[in-house]
Image (cartoon, rainbow, N blue to C red; front, side, top):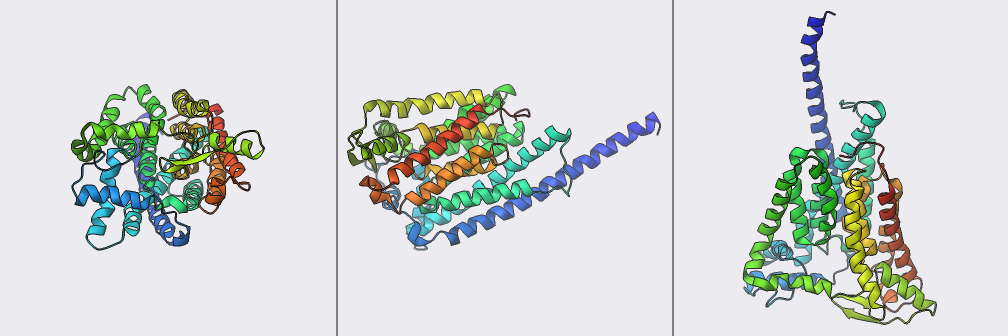
Length: 429
């Protein structure tokens, strides 16, 4: 072939490659979307009513209903421990209840179902991007053909589905599935393309406006944006999204809208945290005095040294900043998972619903960091065994349940440490 013929053939070949890439992407979106919808439906069918832990439902309903129906001022007249956007979110199931269509638990589950599907799809999509990156690193090019197998993505989906199923006691009776799904979506968008960074920033802002812990992933997620010199607009998008979701409850609340920050700052060492579990295990061995009190809606180890509470506050913050450094040498979803594992493992709370936010990102890490993914899955499984079936035994510090809780948190800590030490063989996204 002559040089002129080669030049003419090159654009045609590029056009065919782009068409094949677009066709494969559309196929993968369709497959992932169908799997996610089916997975969410199966979750709703597979989580039995007898398993669901309902202690927070009355608080959700009363808080949102008093604001929606009685026009009471949030925070000033309605005690509420979550950010203002959470109160707006909980008005959605209250609207269904007030219409007479559903009772509150079913209405909340219905509102959460799309977020369940979104979390599953995000895990699938991150796995797709990561799989293509591994192929590119190993073979010099990504195999974007219609014959490309989706085995890693399907395995990731199955992992995410099982992990979320193990969270079944709180999956539809807490609203953590919404910020977890939005955070996973943010990671997926940032990993896909810098052109989607503004939407990714908005998703992260919305997630952090519902619950604070998605904020722990923010420094790690900002690193690729700083490298691409595109940090400003995504951050602005996140702030705008958070503000828009928060304003409806903030305006009538005034300065009281920030009272939830003091609420969480005042919390002590919860018995399900690493530090609380450790103190209770020491108590069983006669090495520590254990006293529990029901405070801030949970059981706290009031006899634990104040230093443990301080460590449980400062160490997660230090870990969050460390994960920004981790993000400079590994993939963005692994750095985000590292930050969140540090928040869960080293913090002073350790609530069972925190597993929900770890599940999709741990699934997405299955082929890049299998040890960390399996540690998170093991932790979620132990949590499902411990809570709510043996909660009262844990409160009474009887049996092996404090030790089970300690192992559960040590597994999350192991995942965090292994991710912090990991170096990606390929260039991070």
